[in-house]
Image 1: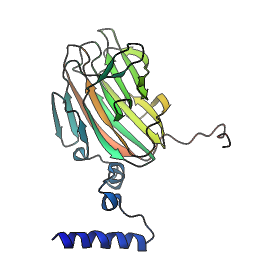
Image 2: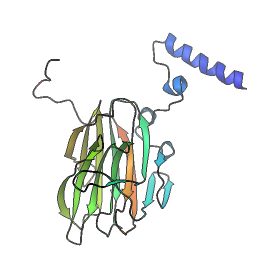
Image 3: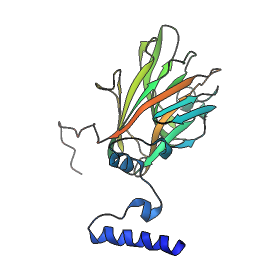
Length: 245
């Protein structure tokens, strides 16, 4: 059986080369590219393709719906201003080497109720290099819609205040090589730019997906639906041309 399996893999690789196509990554190095698979399936994301980096207090992944119940004192932050480092939030991610694509997800955070309760999208490469976008609960009047880019162990935080009665938000995460764009939407149709940034560690394979956490003494359940991969919706810049190298 082992010999037969290797023979099938060898034949598949020979056929790909003979036809002028690339050797499938899964055959070449045991890597199954989640974005490639999703695009081949019409954009549908299979939750079985995502993996946990730290599991949450509780979760459920059924059909196209993921729920995450947070544990108290979970967060992602590195150094800047606060001078502390938090690296224990659960993240659920897929892997890809694709350089141009967009990832869309709808978040429902109706259960958030304590300061800094949050959920959204994430690209977690390692403890010192990651990107996230979310809504963070503040109080009964307002909350923060924002994003954090962490490069080489230092985080920033760009935010805007939105009403506290907003309980759902769509996000679109787009990659153009090692540059990234995060957008948000109230209806999943019209998206507004939140951030454009460069991630120094995102030169090849990346991991991206969703996260939820409760930095203080709190817990809530976040709901993620409508996960989808599309062609890159963040189009090439049509203004000033790049500088000559």
